[in-house]
Amino acid sequence: MTIHSDHPFVPPESDRDVVRRFRGRLAAPVTVVATGEGRDRSGLTVSSLVIVDGPQARVVAFIDPDSELGEAVDVGTFVTVSLLSGGDQFLADAFAGLAPAPGGAFRLGAWDDTAWGPALAQRSWLGARIEGVRELGYALELVAVIEHAEIHGDEGLVHVRGRYRSS
Image 1 (cartoon, helix red, strand yellow):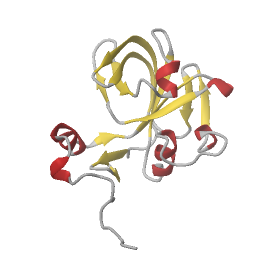
Image 2 (cartoon, one colour):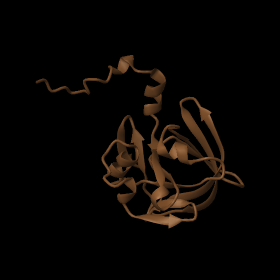
Image 3 (cartoon, helix red, strand yellow):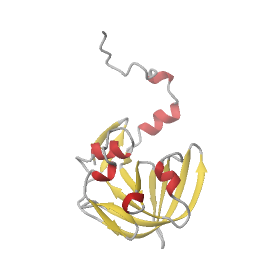
Image 4 (cartoon, helix red, strand yellow):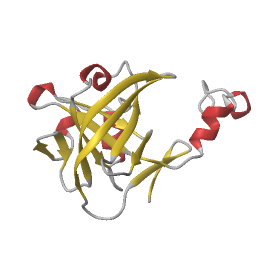
């Protein structure tokens, strides 16, 4: 048995898509975008998002169209965007489908029920209403009007080159 320093099934970096390699070098916030209530909740770890300021600020997020969240959202859907912080790495992996979550990922952490959906307790979060959904590249682009914002603490979790770091 050989122990590899790299994953044996991942191609060498020089053979990987250059755009994906470039994107991996951009520090990205780690959030959970969620919707629904009770047993009808769905959520997904999302790092591809931007806040657009203005008289009616917006959040634009790019999600997997085949995810449970992708199937649950449409124009008019309310969503929350919870900013994860240091120590939330397992939670991020669970909502991304990379770590086990017996009984569902919402059993991890404490969640507050809000008018916009489930928000991670004691974390900064946004409440928004989706005004546009479209396919863009391999993603589903969600554009949502921000209707509520709360700040708790001042440090967020970021993702760079496949690893989590505190900001």
